[in-house]
Length: 305
Ligand code: SF4
Image (cartoon, rainbow, N blue to C red):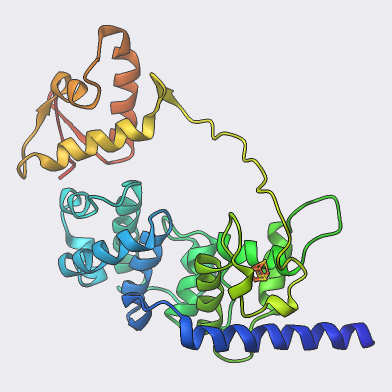
Protein backbone atom coordinates (compact mmCIF):
# COMPACT_ATOMS: atom_id res chain seq x y z
CA UNK A 1 0.00 0.00 0.00
CA UNK A 2 2.78 2.36 1.02
CA UNK A 3 4.74 1.41 -2.09
CA UNK A 4 1.79 2.28 -4.29
CA UNK A 5 1.30 5.65 -2.70
CA UNK A 6 5.05 6.36 -3.02
CA UNK A 7 4.86 5.53 -6.71
CA UNK A 8 1.89 7.85 -7.20
CA UNK A 9 3.62 10.61 -5.27
CA UNK A 10 6.74 10.21 -7.36
CA UNK A 11 4.72 10.39 -10.54
CA UNK A 12 3.02 13.60 -9.40
CA UNK A 13 6.37 15.15 -8.55
CA UNK A 14 7.84 14.19 -11.92
CA UNK A 15 4.86 15.73 -13.73
CA UNK A 16 4.93 18.94 -11.68
CA UNK A 17 8.70 19.40 -12.01
CA UNK A 18 8.74 18.81 -15.74
CA UNK A 19 5.77 21.07 -16.48
CA UNK A 20 7.39 23.83 -14.42
CA UNK A 21 10.63 23.39 -16.33
CA UNK A 22 8.78 23.45 -19.66
CA UNK A 23 7.04 26.73 -18.86
CA UNK A 24 10.44 28.40 -18.53
CA UNK A 25 12.54 26.40 -20.97
CA UNK A 26 10.25 25.00 -23.69
CA UNK A 27 11.42 25.59 -27.23
CA UNK A 28 9.65 28.28 -29.18
CA UNK A 29 8.66 26.48 -32.38
CA UNK A 30 6.26 28.09 -34.81
CA UNK A 31 4.03 25.02 -35.17
CA UNK A 32 3.38 24.98 -31.46
CA UNK A 33 1.23 28.08 -31.85
CA UNK A 34 -0.82 26.52 -34.63
CA UNK A 35 -4.43 25.53 -34.12
CA UNK A 36 -5.13 24.28 -37.64
CA UNK A 37 -4.93 20.43 -37.63
CA UNK A 38 -3.58 20.38 -41.21
CA UNK A 39 -0.67 22.65 -40.29
CA UNK A 40 0.09 20.60 -37.20
CA UNK A 41 0.01 17.45 -39.30
CA UNK A 42 2.49 18.96 -41.79
CA UNK A 43 4.90 19.76 -38.97
CA UNK A 44 4.63 16.25 -37.56
CA UNK A 45 5.24 14.60 -40.93
CA UNK A 46 8.24 16.86 -41.52
CA UNK A 47 9.65 16.11 -38.07
CA UNK A 48 9.41 12.35 -38.62
CA UNK A 49 12.82 12.20 -40.29
CA UNK A 50 14.18 15.72 -40.44
CA UNK A 51 15.95 17.82 -37.82
CA UNK A 52 14.02 20.62 -36.10
CA UNK A 53 16.34 23.34 -37.48
CA UNK A 54 15.71 22.28 -41.08
CA UNK A 55 11.96 21.91 -40.52
CA UNK A 56 11.84 25.41 -39.03
CA UNK A 57 12.92 26.89 -42.37
CA UNK A 58 10.99 24.58 -44.72
CA UNK A 59 7.71 24.54 -42.79
CA UNK A 60 6.65 28.15 -43.55
CA UNK A 61 7.71 27.76 -47.18
CA UNK A 62 5.64 24.61 -47.62
CA UNK A 63 2.59 26.23 -46.02
CA UNK A 64 2.94 29.34 -48.18
CA UNK A 65 2.68 27.09 -51.23
CA UNK A 66 0.02 24.75 -49.83
CA UNK A 67 -1.83 26.68 -47.13
CA UNK A 68 -4.72 24.24 -46.86
CA UNK A 69 -5.30 20.55 -47.19
CA UNK A 70 -7.50 21.22 -50.19
CA UNK A 71 -4.76 23.20 -51.96
CA UNK A 72 -2.30 20.37 -51.35
CA UNK A 73 -4.79 17.85 -52.73
CA UNK A 74 -5.23 19.90 -55.94
CA UNK A 75 -1.52 20.69 -56.46
CA UNK A 76 0.61 19.11 -59.15
CA UNK A 77 2.69 16.32 -57.66
CA UNK A 78 5.82 17.72 -59.32
CA UNK A 79 5.23 20.97 -57.41
CA UNK A 80 4.89 19.13 -54.11
CA UNK A 81 8.16 17.26 -54.74
CA UNK A 82 9.92 20.49 -55.70
CA UNK A 83 8.73 22.23 -52.54
CA UNK A 84 9.94 19.32 -50.42
CA UNK A 85 13.51 20.01 -51.56
CA UNK A 86 16.06 19.81 -48.77
CA UNK A 87 13.88 17.67 -46.51
CA UNK A 88 15.03 14.21 -47.64
CA UNK A 89 12.84 11.09 -47.64
CA UNK A 90 10.73 12.42 -50.51
CA UNK A 91 8.16 9.65 -50.16
CA UNK A 92 6.77 11.62 -47.23
CA UNK A 93 5.73 14.44 -49.56
CA UNK A 94 3.92 12.00 -51.82
CA UNK A 95 2.18 10.33 -48.90
CA UNK A 96 1.14 13.69 -47.50
CA UNK A 97 -0.46 14.61 -50.79
CA UNK A 98 -2.11 11.21 -51.06
CA UNK A 99 -3.46 11.68 -47.56
CA UNK A 100 -4.85 15.11 -48.48
CA UNK A 101 -6.72 13.62 -51.44
CA UNK A 102 -8.24 10.88 -49.25
CA UNK A 103 -9.27 13.38 -46.58
CA UNK A 104 -10.92 15.62 -49.19
CA UNK A 105 -12.70 12.66 -50.74
CA UNK A 106 -13.65 10.61 -47.67
CA UNK A 107 -13.72 13.06 -44.75
CA UNK A 108 -15.13 16.21 -46.35
CA UNK A 109 -11.73 17.91 -46.32
CA UNK A 110 -11.36 17.77 -42.52
CA UNK A 111 -8.74 15.63 -40.83
CA UNK A 112 -10.45 12.96 -38.72
CA UNK A 113 -10.03 13.29 -34.95
CA UNK A 114 -10.25 9.61 -34.23
CA UNK A 115 -6.86 7.93 -33.73
CA UNK A 116 -7.82 4.81 -35.69
CA UNK A 117 -9.00 6.89 -38.63
CA UNK A 118 -5.80 8.92 -38.51
CA UNK A 119 -3.67 5.80 -38.42
CA UNK A 120 -5.45 4.50 -41.49
CA UNK A 121 -4.16 7.42 -43.57
CA UNK A 122 -0.97 7.19 -45.68
CA UNK A 123 2.22 7.99 -43.80
CA UNK A 124 0.55 8.15 -40.38
CA UNK A 125 1.86 5.70 -37.81
CA UNK A 126 1.02 5.37 -34.14
CA UNK A 127 3.25 8.25 -33.07
CA UNK A 128 1.97 10.75 -35.64
CA UNK A 129 -1.68 9.79 -35.06
CA UNK A 130 -1.28 10.40 -31.32
CA UNK A 131 0.65 13.63 -31.88
CA UNK A 132 -2.10 15.01 -34.12
CA UNK A 133 -4.83 13.82 -31.73
CA UNK A 134 -3.11 15.58 -28.83
CA UNK A 135 -1.62 18.69 -30.41
CA UNK A 136 -4.38 19.42 -32.94
CA UNK A 137 -7.48 18.08 -31.25
CA UNK A 138 -6.56 18.48 -27.58
CA UNK A 139 -6.99 14.81 -26.74
CA UNK A 140 -5.50 13.44 -23.53
CA UNK A 141 -3.30 10.78 -25.13
CA UNK A 142 0.40 9.90 -24.81
CA UNK A 143 2.85 10.68 -27.60
CA UNK A 144 5.86 8.38 -27.61
CA UNK A 145 8.85 9.08 -29.82
CA UNK A 146 12.47 8.04 -29.32
CA UNK A 147 13.12 10.95 -26.94
CA UNK A 148 10.20 9.95 -24.74
CA UNK A 149 11.25 6.30 -24.84
CA UNK A 150 14.71 7.21 -23.68
CA UNK A 151 13.48 9.34 -20.77
CA UNK A 152 11.03 6.70 -19.58
CA UNK A 153 13.69 3.99 -19.84
CA UNK A 154 15.94 6.06 -17.61
CA UNK A 155 13.24 6.99 -15.14
CA UNK A 156 12.22 3.33 -14.92
CA UNK A 157 15.41 1.32 -15.51
CA UNK A 158 14.59 -2.35 -15.83
CA UNK A 159 16.00 -4.95 -13.56
CA UNK A 160 15.02 -7.64 -16.02
CA UNK A 161 17.10 -9.06 -18.83
CA UNK A 162 15.92 -6.49 -21.32
CA UNK A 163 17.87 -3.25 -21.04
CA UNK A 164 15.03 -1.03 -22.18
CA UNK A 165 11.32 -1.13 -21.85
CA UNK A 166 9.39 -2.71 -24.66
CA UNK A 167 7.05 -0.67 -26.83
CA UNK A 168 3.79 -1.70 -25.14
CA UNK A 169 5.19 -0.95 -21.68
CA UNK A 170 6.49 2.35 -22.96
CA UNK A 171 3.07 3.50 -24.18
CA UNK A 172 1.44 2.28 -20.98
CA UNK A 173 3.98 4.16 -18.85
CA UNK A 174 3.53 7.29 -20.93
CA UNK A 175 -0.22 7.01 -20.46
CA UNK A 176 0.23 6.51 -16.71
CA UNK A 177 2.14 9.81 -16.54
CA UNK A 178 -0.39 11.91 -18.43
CA UNK A 179 -1.55 14.78 -16.25
CA UNK A 180 -5.32 15.16 -15.88
CA UNK A 181 -5.19 18.37 -17.88
CA UNK A 182 -2.60 19.89 -20.16
CA UNK A 183 -1.51 16.73 -21.97
CA UNK A 184 -0.33 19.03 -24.77
CA UNK A 185 2.33 20.74 -22.64
CA UNK A 186 3.26 17.51 -20.94
CA UNK A 187 3.99 15.72 -24.21
CA UNK A 188 5.89 18.71 -25.58
CA UNK A 189 7.85 18.96 -22.32
CA UNK A 190 8.99 15.35 -22.60
CA UNK A 191 10.17 15.92 -26.14
CA UNK A 192 12.08 19.05 -25.17
CA UNK A 193 13.70 17.33 -22.24
CA UNK A 194 14.80 14.51 -24.55
CA UNK A 195 16.13 16.96 -27.14
CA UNK A 196 18.04 19.23 -24.76
CA UNK A 197 18.90 17.40 -21.55
CA UNK A 198 18.13 13.70 -21.46
CA UNK A 199 20.06 13.26 -24.68
CA UNK A 200 21.18 9.93 -26.05
CA UNK A 201 24.94 10.15 -25.64
CA UNK A 202 25.62 11.59 -22.20
CA UNK A 203 22.55 13.07 -20.50
CA UNK A 204 23.02 16.44 -18.86
CA UNK A 205 21.59 15.26 -15.53
CA UNK A 206 22.96 18.24 -13.62
CA UNK A 207 20.44 20.43 -15.50
CA UNK A 208 17.54 18.01 -15.35
CA UNK A 209 14.37 19.06 -13.51
CA UNK A 210 13.69 15.47 -12.40
CA UNK A 211 17.22 14.50 -11.37
CA UNK A 212 16.18 13.90 -7.74
CA UNK A 213 13.51 11.49 -8.89
CA UNK A 214 15.54 9.62 -11.46
CA UNK A 215 17.43 6.42 -10.54
CA UNK A 216 19.63 6.82 -13.63
CA UNK A 217 20.82 10.34 -12.79
CA UNK A 218 24.58 10.75 -13.14
CA UNK A 219 25.05 7.07 -13.87
CA UNK A 220 28.08 6.39 -15.97
CA UNK A 221 26.75 4.70 -18.98
CA UNK A 222 28.09 3.42 -22.20
CA UNK A 223 26.04 3.81 -25.21
CA UNK A 224 25.00 0.43 -26.53
CA UNK A 225 26.75 -0.08 -29.84
CA UNK A 226 24.12 -0.15 -32.54
CA UNK A 227 24.56 -2.80 -35.17
CA UNK A 228 25.42 -1.12 -38.47
CA UNK A 229 22.33 -0.51 -40.56
CA UNK A 230 22.20 -2.80 -43.55
CA UNK A 231 20.70 -1.22 -46.59
CA UNK A 232 20.96 -1.74 -50.34
CA UNK A 233 23.89 0.15 -51.78
CA UNK A 234 26.19 0.46 -54.79
CA UNK A 235 29.94 1.10 -54.58
CA UNK A 236 29.52 1.55 -50.82
CA UNK A 237 26.90 4.29 -51.16
CA UNK A 238 23.33 3.56 -50.02
CA UNK A 239 20.68 3.52 -52.73
CA UNK A 240 18.70 6.17 -50.87
CA UNK A 241 21.53 8.63 -51.54
CA UNK A 242 21.36 7.91 -55.29
CA UNK A 243 17.57 8.25 -55.13
CA UNK A 244 17.90 11.63 -53.44
CA UNK A 245 20.43 12.78 -56.04
CA UNK A 246 18.15 11.71 -58.89
CA UNK A 247 15.23 13.67 -57.45
CA UNK A 248 17.48 16.70 -57.00
CA UNK A 249 18.45 16.58 -60.68
CA UNK A 250 14.79 16.30 -61.71
CA UNK A 251 13.82 19.19 -59.44
CA UNK A 252 16.37 21.38 -61.21
CA UNK A 253 14.76 20.83 -64.61
CA UNK A 254 12.45 23.59 -65.72
CA UNK A 255 8.74 22.79 -65.17
CA UNK A 256 7.68 20.12 -67.65
CA UNK A 257 11.32 19.42 -68.58
CA UNK A 258 12.94 16.01 -68.83
CA UNK A 259 16.39 14.43 -69.01
CA UNK A 260 17.65 11.32 -70.78
CA UNK A 261 18.15 8.24 -68.68
CA UNK A 262 21.87 8.06 -69.55
CA UNK A 263 22.45 11.72 -68.63
CA UNK A 264 20.71 11.17 -65.32
CA UNK A 265 22.89 8.11 -64.66
CA UNK A 266 26.05 10.17 -65.11
CA UNK A 267 24.70 12.95 -62.91
CA UNK A 268 24.06 10.67 -59.97
CA UNK A 269 27.10 8.43 -60.51
CA UNK A 270 29.93 10.13 -62.45
CA UNK A 271 31.87 6.83 -62.69
CA UNK A 272 28.83 5.01 -64.14
CA UNK A 273 29.66 2.07 -66.44
CA UNK A 274 27.66 -0.61 -68.24
CA UNK A 275 28.16 -2.85 -65.23
CA UNK A 276 25.92 -0.53 -63.22
CA UNK A 277 23.14 -0.73 -65.78
CA UNK A 278 20.99 -3.44 -64.16
CA UNK A 279 21.24 -1.81 -60.77
CA UNK A 280 20.41 1.60 -62.29
CA UNK A 281 17.33 0.34 -64.13
CA UNK A 282 16.04 -1.15 -60.90
CA UNK A 283 16.63 2.15 -59.11
CA UNK A 284 14.58 3.95 -61.79
CA UNK A 285 11.87 1.33 -61.62
CA UNK A 286 11.56 1.80 -57.88
CA UNK A 287 11.45 5.57 -58.18
CA UNK A 288 8.70 5.27 -60.77
CA UNK A 289 6.80 2.74 -58.68
CA UNK A 290 6.95 5.13 -55.70
CA UNK A 291 5.52 7.91 -57.87
CA UNK A 292 8.62 10.09 -57.60
CA UNK A 293 9.46 10.15 -61.33
CA UNK A 294 7.92 9.45 -64.67
CA UNK A 295 9.34 7.79 -67.78
CA UNK A 296 8.58 9.81 -70.93
CA UNK A 297 8.83 7.64 -73.99
CA UNK A 298 11.64 5.09 -73.90
CA UNK A 299 14.51 7.12 -72.55
CA UNK A 300 13.42 10.44 -71.03
CA UNK A 301 12.67 11.00 -67.38
CA UNK A 302 10.91 13.79 -65.48
CA UNK A 303 9.14 14.47 -62.22
CA UNK A 304 5.55 13.17 -62.18
CA UNK A 305 2.89 15.68 -63.37
S1 SF4 B 1 18.26 12.72 -14.46
FE1 SF4 B 1 19.52 12.35 -16.23
S2 SF4 B 1 18.99 10.28 -16.94
FE2 SF4 B 1 17.37 10.97 -15.51
S3 SF4 B 1 15.79 11.87 -16.83
FE3 SF4 B 1 17.13 13.54 -16.17
S4 SF4 B 1 18.70 13.72 -17.78
FE4 SF4 B 1 17.66 11.73 -18.05
